[in-house]
Length: 149
Image 1 (cartoon, helix red, strand yellow):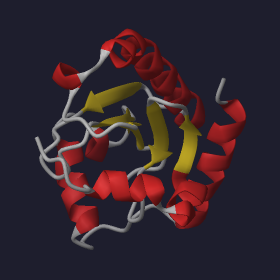
Image 2 (spheres, helix red, strand yellow):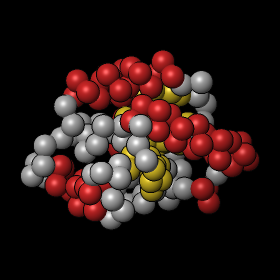
Image 3 (cartoon, one colour):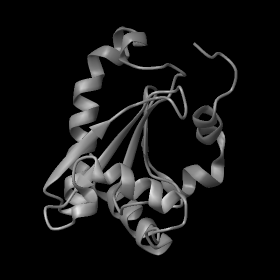
Image 4 (cartoon, one colour):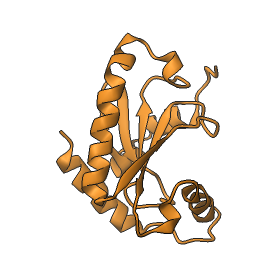
């Protein structure tokens, strides 16, 4: 596994990024909104604070708290978006640092359906589809911070 500085480790150290997108942080986890360009309002990311590739690399504390933090972050996603489902996806190829995507799924929005969400994501990243308004993201982050337990 990579031991040098990764993009997520760097993001965790950037004060402006934390102020803009971070919702919650403790010794093990950091919950944040997807940075600009955000493909969907309420698309959250749950990152490990420690640089690790995935659950196979968890220490005892990370392993014992994982289920609860994923449940709490998913519940928060539902509260701030009123979505019908939440997809939880972690590939780890773009940045080999555990970051679980919590993606709101809306029954009336085809672009959030199953693998269509990946096409929507790519379309936003490539500028073919408009990203979520940054003011809406800011408002959701503020609401999420207020609602976090």
